[in-house]
Length: 311
Image (cartoon, rainbow, N blue to C red; front, side):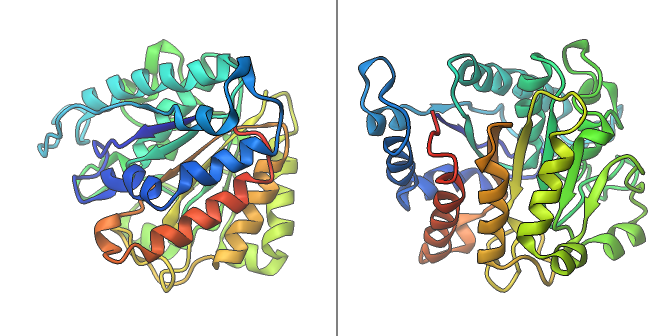
């Protein structure tokens, strides 16, 4: 089931809130309906294409541009509440035996997706992002949670966002693989806290040295070890090469090619241990002719088609 999560509470209302509509207009639901049709028989007599069109939407509270004095971040209370609401929606799909596909919004929506899993036990995360998003509030220039969601998910940051529902960290370091990032020089200069040694990291150079498919297979192997119930796949589209994905708010040179990302997604999403997927940060206002949305839709379709069943 597709869930729209157009929150920009962790960023700003720059246009990423229009991501779900842009991908729907580009035909994503029809393409995913075709994926469902290739899979299992219709659930409860509902045809596959109609089922995939039954999407949910979780609206966010009004954006507050003021940085919170206690936590040092923007909209902490709103993000905490939104995370619970999104977790309820994602959990509803999981409880039906479905595979949630969540369309953001900014990267702070990851907290809600992971909270849905944390309620159910121990899970992992494949983190596909051009940035490591491991900032602490004191080092993030404007307090944007979309630059620190991985740190928060692993328990580093204000308790309002690291202890959702009193459950503690949403992830253990060893159950995370960050793949494709290329911001090490930038984040180090800004004073971002280093990635912990237990968190597995394949930066862009490592992905290129191994090859995208091999890097993805090694990532999945790590995520399926050691007692977790499966893993979530998070995609920030700025993991793509800036030359082919300029429709993002924080641009950085380099990145994965479209075929490389498709290969990674196909490998990551094919396994039964993959339990859900989100896509974030694409800004349709920076794609006036819709060509990037169309290419992104094709990429997502090719990646998700490896599953054969989305619901």
